[in-house]
Length: 182
View 1 (cartoon, helix red, strand yellow):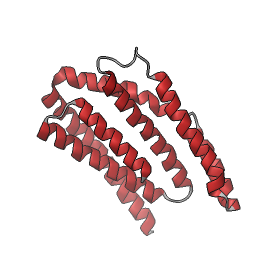
View 2 (cartoon, rainbow, N blue to C red):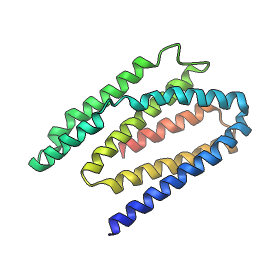
View 3 (cartoon, helix red, strand yellow):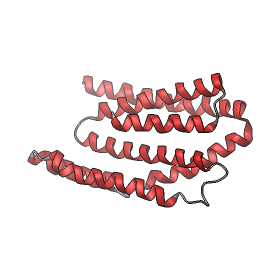
């Protein structure tokens, strides 16, 4: 039962963070950046979110490989090729799909956000696979930590330093990379 309570607490905390992010960040960005810059941020973020579909089902394929490997005691050997393929596929499709037409007025911002979203997609795929191996609490703890850190850092740099969108995009990219590494 303690594992279930831990999972419930982490999931609830993450959902609260996501709600706070939605309620807090938009008004802050509008106030500090103004409507034109905030609109450009959300357009770049919308383009970046295209990367969230680039696993093309490998999250599900990984489940089968992990379960089969776990039953045979060969999880690592069977999992590595699927994980390598998932990383290659997500990053390659991200690079191919982000062309000059989609980059908008701030190409660096769009590319940074797209890379962050691609890493986030890999984080979700890896989380799904870790869940298969009964590591769901680790997955939730990492996601909660990343989400809470993103809120604190975004609010801090935007409200305190009036940082531009590129700085917030770099924070997102860095946090996704750290979460994927954890």
